[in-house]
Image (cartoon, rainbow, N blue to C red):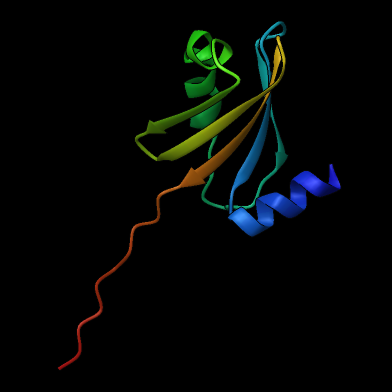
Length: 91
């Protein structure tokens, strides 16, 4: 777990564990305070897609998720939020 948390910090990502048998998702590491639980529903809705590959990259309206299969029923998901940037103008 420590190595996953270190990687998440470096990547500025949240880490989510997905268990396809139990149909559950759990934050293993939450790096972004703006994260919400919508990502959990999104991942469970994409379960067939993410289980069919050992590595999957998926965009969604709030960000991007990289999913890595641990075994046939469990996955680790790195979630990256898109940040809104404000334009700063100087006179």
